Image 1 (cartoon, rainbow, N blue to C red):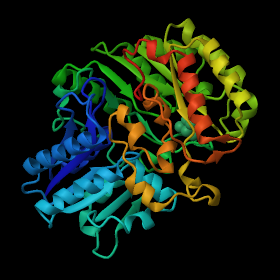
Image 2 (tube, rainbow, N blue to C red; image 1 turned 90 degrees about the horizontal axis):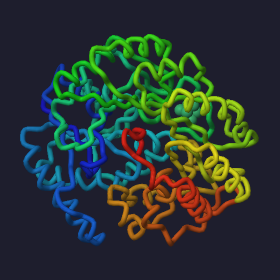
Image 3 (cartoon, helix red, strand yellow; image 1 turned 90 degrees about the vertical axis):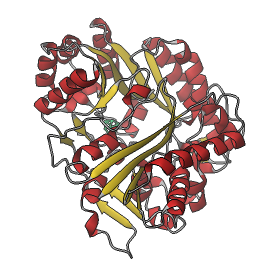
Image 4 (spheres, rainbow, N blue to C red; image 1 turned 60 degrees about the vertical axis):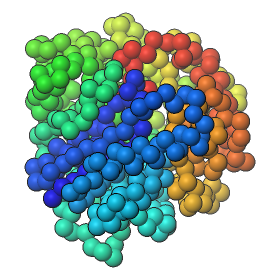
Length: 458
Ligand code: SF4
């Protein structure tokens, strides 16, 4: 059986990264099937294109690449990020036109999000070109494709890491096309803490529990990347690398590793102490991203973050002492936020003098998608198209749901949104939330900071 795994994101080779969910899938499926990967890259200057010209360019690119890749394929899997369902439908339409017998499956973070929000079933009724949706353990389901039935469109399985030795190779990826390649790896999936009320971390893999890999398997993988591709820069995709029970062993091994690697990762504040920070330094960790979210104890308690402002100052100072870059991740528009609290958050964040700042506008967690005062039309999820360059988002964004991508303010900072829906989250309108996020980005000068070896999520 021949599979084609598709990442529909149109990538900019200067700063985008290859898709770790697809290569993890490839690693398992290739034991039984022939696997090909399809990625898309901008092939020309797109800065001056209008929205219509870009859309035409995008669909021509989909068509051209698919036409050459689809021969002899029986199963297509398309990875769907937030706001990419529209393109998954377009790609499916093209494939069905070329060969109506090909089975098309869509999965990914956005599909997990819709499923968890209890609206995937309704949305799926409008997507006739897509045969199946795989939620959660898409790898298991793709590997056991014989279980699918004609009269059932949505399949769910809790994600499990059965094969601890994932032979992730990236072989089928176009790694040479990435100019500043930093390869994603993971040591664990999910979140061990898993209590923050705004967080959908578990939807990334669709697992309900925290799972982790063996140190030796991760080291073998890093060594392989160096030997095969001379790659020495990595980012650990874990929600908190320090949570892993073998975190100290990993750091010790990396400190004496044959290859000099540089890496970045994320950590919870309360999991770091001086001993662990020193270990990070010795293992050549360059940057740690911290989920700080808010800088007042009242909000931190409300969102069940499990840390205090005192913990934040202590950990930031420790990381600075050991000269590890600190990236702070914050949220604007948490229910309960008002302008005064947010302006105070921005000032305190700026005073922390971090190396990098990540400001997120509030994204509605999946479980709240159907709350009666913020219900969205099903059509909005289908129409939303965020697979476009930042300078065209302002023009393309129409429906309410687009304003709740947590990166929308960041993406449109240089091309500011001017139209807003009449919706409120707590005390603030969507317009106020986005504009306050712009203000936070401006005041912490993110655009002027050095972005080398930046966090994975930049
Ligand atoms: S915000 Fe971080 S610590 Fe909190 S649940 Fe999400 S991943 Fe876990």
